[in-house]
Image 1 (cartoon, rainbow, N blue to C red):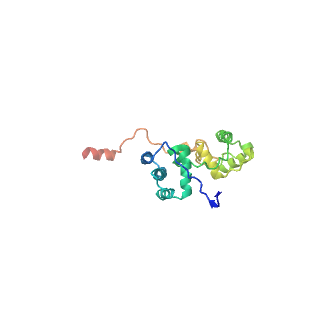
Image 2 (image 1 turned 60 degrees about the vertical axis):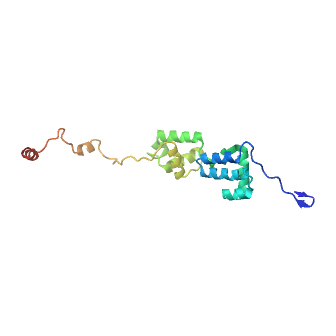
Image 3 (image 1 turned 90 degrees about the vertical axis):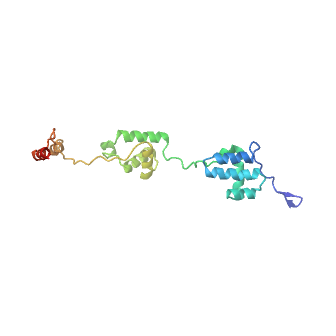
Amino acid sequence: MVAKGRFAMRPGLTLREDYDAAGLRGVARRTKSATQGRRLLALAEIYDGGSRTKAACVGGVGLQTIRDWVLRFNAHGPEGLADRQAPGHPGKLKTAQREALAAMVESGPMPAIHGVVRWRLKDLAMWVWEEFRVSVSETTLSRILRALGYRKLSARPRHHAQAAGAVDAFKKRSPSAWTRSRATRGSIATG
């Protein structure tokens, strides 16, 4: 902006009138977040009549960051200065797709159709691609399944030609009633 041949500065941002320096310091004292407390103390410096530069020194940030804090504070109050959860990337699979994946895991593979006797992450990733045309890595699929409540379990290996009763016949059976040997009984009695 140019006014009469000189540059005119824009008017500064003002803070909300429903708070004061003592109130902000009290909120900063009660908060459990160190970063929110630091931001509140920096704005309390402005309420006390300090410059934005002084507030930036108190907050350990630059002037632009102080301006951002003032805007957030004016819009949302002290809660606006709390750390916000970053939104992150949206999930690769929608809710309906996750439910279909869970149903497929529960029902298990059909060897004639799927070509496998048990699901592996590689097979499930291929199924997701064929069903939804969504490319999901095995690592991401593992995270999705864990979030759905599934854990990686492997059955104990068993030979395909093993007879059903062979294992039970091989196991050693303990006598139903344990008895001491005669030598031990005699030494206890004489001892």
